[in-house]
Length: 335
Ligand code: GCU
Image 1 (cartoon, rainbow, N blue to C red):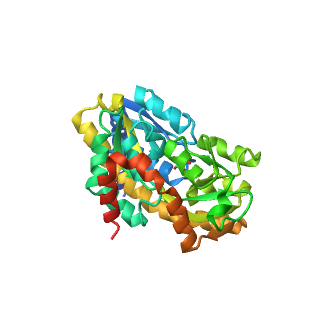
Image 2: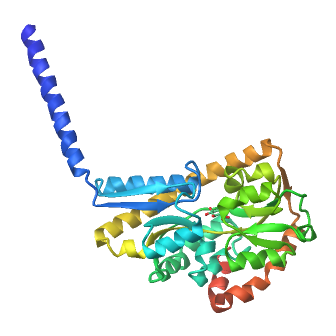
Image 3: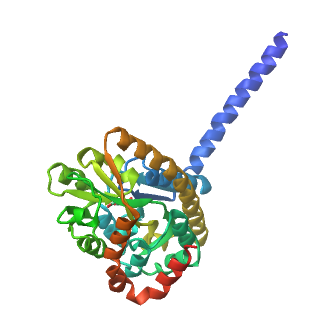
């Protein structure tokens, strides 16, 4: 009996030493060759940030800790405009942005964020996952940014602190915050409102102090930023679906081996699948949270939604005249 205890004791000690030794070896392997930064302007529990964490986790796993990506959320590394400037110079390695500010660099991207260009979420994903989406990703090469994968960002709606919007005329003279994009400014002007371009992080206090009357965004952004607390009228006009992109700085990209590039691309695509899935859940959660808080949600009649759509139509001539063939192809893919 005693002998058995001694043998098991020796065995356990041997096992422990082996475990510690293995950990040490593991730790030795864990010496990163690259530590990269990733900028995200949403909070830690927002779907795109969770997608970024998943991306970083996968890259670390697949490179055995050789590539570490540090995700900095909450706009800690700056607003989207300054993050793009830094990314272009290689000061920040990765980010996820709305294509609105990116269209200042790559004009053609405007096509993908035109008001009412997609009939539904499925339509948008058919375009992004198909030849058109692939060509856009390819065309980004040489722009300073390498596009890795598309991210979901739902449909955007107008909201304001003054009144319910039932008709196009109700938009008149409302001061609406827009993203830093010419297209977005013109879009709001065509509705008879006043466009106020401003960084995303400044919108809450601008609403609170009445510098602006409203803004426009998807359900999760309206909720996660607490804009709903200071702007309770949310109108379901669904004027745009603005895809988002995970980007790598071209400066960073050029330092990587072909194998590492392939790993990063693969992980970015997997993280986008994950983000799409949790996006749906968050959208539902955000809807119920703002409804419970007493926000007034207004459905537009079909007639009025069409009037919004028609009012924005001149934007196509202005922003897409060089790309009408792509616009037509996108529209034909709605069936
Ligand atoms: C969305 C998007 C952000 C963007 C914001 C905006 O929330 O995810 O990346 O900054 O819209 O309206 O600026």
